[in-house]
Length: 283
Image (tube, rainbow, N blue to C red; front, side, top):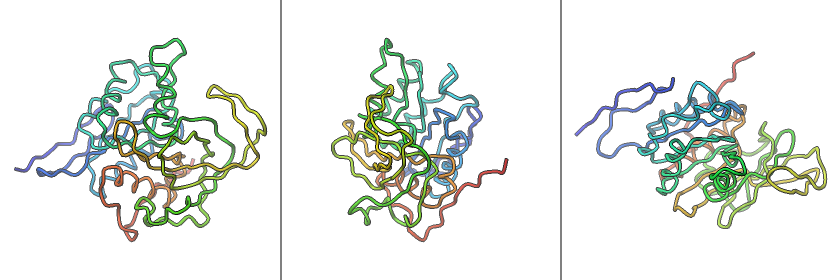
């Protein structure tokens, strides 16, 4: 029997569904938990592109910046219906009634995609009951906590022996440069790096921040995209791509889209499939 899911509007966001049968297309829920790097603009674009390629999509994208507004992220209960959660979050301090929806989704073992700042998705005070989540979301859910970032742009190349990985279908790394700074990571056992980034640091030697003590060289490299199976059984794709300008780059958008398809165990778009990029309006 056919069912029709009508378009809904929640918190200024269109919930896009379609005519579906018993075997529904996978449902991707995109969670915008910061305005840093402008995901409030790029995630609706990504949702539209995923929908064009066969997904159902929902975007949790409040009119305010959840990183800075105590209202946080209403609407997270829709994660119950998600096949994959796509998270772009940073330094959140969600109340338990909202955070519980994310926890329930993660512990369900469904697919997880983490973009850019999601390795440091939470920032609870040291005396807060949820303080450990600041580190654990990156480490236990995505495959690495955040450590520190370098300066300037990041040069991108393939990791060794990954040319045939489906997430890299249609990707050409020749001359690929991301406008985002390089994030250094603490790779957890079992992650499979797909892309490596190389960046430069303005600070050399021992540098201390809230995430620890780091030894920095002028030029450093680190994985910027990887797959993993976390302790909850989730198929995980994590990337520090996600700078606003990354969505103007065919390779960046394709890798993220392929990662979403891979996470739900679906064939990725063929290399000849046209992938749209986002134009940044002139200011």
